[in-house]
Image (cartoon, rainbow, N blue to C red; front, side, top):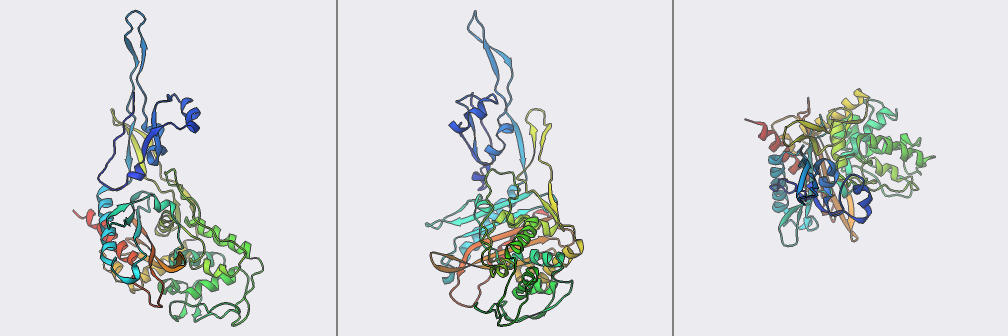
Length: 444
């Protein structure tokens, strides 16, 4: 007797739901030991695979009557449990539509010739629930499709969205003091091109460095963390760069960057980690231009900022119920993976994210949503086939005082990096529209 599964086909999450197929040779012993038969159909990818043993149910068992040769039922089977997903199908449909519209609206801009994708994840920072996930792609024929697995598989440099983690690290390690200022002017290090922010920002502290997205402030944190000293036009020497890399990666991992998020999905990549032989790249690390991360990691990081220090395991499935009795038989509990317990420092970096919104430094769109928000923009240098490109990223949560929704966005290869002029961060546009859609759905 074959097993049959039912799922929604109204939204573009087929690859997340997964599919069924024959038991592979490699897994026959595993399944046979659990009462399966060789010709059974099982979940082979996606949530079908992740939750196979809950979804499978149990076959009815029969024995043959020796006299009549008729089959006699000895145990009634069951059809498996119903899983309740965290995905909000109405919000999911709206997110997909918003992302398609953003791509379609800007596709003819000359410098965006390399862009055909945008990724967004929406989550609840109180529980880790994934409310929506989409990686909308434009095919060669101009049609759009969702490939949501890419939010967990494809990694990119994220740019300035990582700066809150850098500031927290600097404060917690004592590399900087709360309110300490640096003059944001270009750095001249022997043997390297000048390093600078997008413009000279003047005197900035830990909070305004996030508001204004100061690269120079992050460089000073990395230099002090590595027990080095910046001398204009002199060399920059780190005595133990490897230890400093490890320290930085340890802090970033506590937010969810560079480690598995532990989402309940069978495929998840950790991203790319650069080598530690070049100590100068420590500066790039602090501004999101070294290690690569995926959109799910970026979202877990955003949730950790929103809830003030709790790294939650993202969950696609909340619980499961017996189909006949309605009784809850499975609970995917809210799980705290680790905590960042310096509440004063967390408060300061969140204040910087709030200022980024209210002063317009995070873009006009996020200022216009109906709820208060904290946010951070990001632009990262990238390349493909020797073509220099820019990625756009954006993170936000709202309401600021008591966040109930977090959004992360990645737009790979957003535009050509062929002029000094930056283009509008479309992740900020998309994320703001997604946040407003979320709150509109809550309005009676």
